Amino acid sequence: MKCKDLMSILEKKAPVYLAERWDNPGLLVGRRDKEIKKILVALDVTEEVIDEAIKLEADIIVTHHPLIFGSLKTVNDSTFTGRKVLRLIENGICHYAMHTNLDTAFGGTNDTLAEIIGLENVEPLAVSCEQDGLPNGLGRMGDIKEEMKFVDFARLVKDKLKLECVSITGDKEKNVKKVGLCTGSGFEFIEEAQANGCDVYVTADVKFHDAQKAVDMGMCLIDATHYGTENIIVPVLKKYIEEESEKAGFGVSVFESKADGQVFKFV
Image (cartoon, rainbow, N blue to C red; front, side):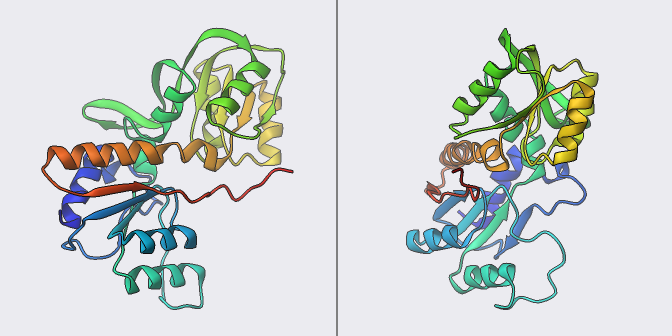
């Protein structure tokens, strides 16, 4: 398999046109014609993930978050990003990122979160584009099977995502049925969630004044952490790459990163 063959497989699932304008998905490091035999899938390109790739002799790291976002004026060892890019190049490792295009894509991060917490009648939340002739966009909304108290739903989210804790604002005793969600930093869509009749909104990276706004809106809010809402896509991507590569007749080995990317610890 050439790198460009893998790119075609990845872009079949999450076309680059689905990405937000500010985003930077795609092949960020490496050559399109590089031979690919071993693939490491991770959430981020951290130093630990690079160590893992080197040990595995991986040819490419496929991540959700791009290593390079803005302009990169130099590639040297004086910056965190520069050092990582250098290590990738020195060890012949490519890097491909699927970011907001994977958030939006059907079967991507938001659909995965909706499935894990058991939503039914799932629809796009913030419609902004089409995919395969159907409306799509960031976030999802849907119903839980049975109405429950907000505090019980928050515990369900915590348990389903295997988190130590989640942060919540709102009336713990309020009954909730319809759920809005956006993986990662998705607070900006809380008004869409309310306008569509959602009782509770699940996202991450909620700031203090955003939480105050949710209280003023009367919306129940769950911050399930950036890592918690997005690392769930890593095993999904691994399985997808394995299945699609096999269908295409490519003999590659795909590995799921074992690195702990949850930088926040709870005491």
